[in-house]
Image (cartoon, rainbow, N blue to C red; front, side):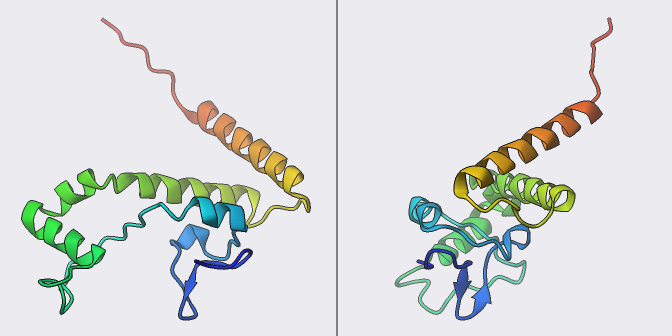
Length: 135
């Protein structure tokens, strides 16, 4: 588990999805997130590990499921589309409001984030058409 204030790194390489790279996470968030299962789809040229038959890893189990049911079914089972929505939201937030919070204290940062998300939601609502069914 990463130390408080560090980014997600393994062997000196960042492994967070692109919109989250460069963010540093407090210990409270990291401790609360240990139960999450990170799912990154294997490439189309997927190859199981050498121990896939005896001691399959999580990646091996995902590869086998893709082989058995197909990539689209696997994405539906793992709710992979949620990741895309989360990445899009983070990219939108960072693109419009900046890469970092400007407040120094945690309560002020929380307020700044809430204000930013509220502003983005209002922008989305303003651009969304109102659809009315006509008979």
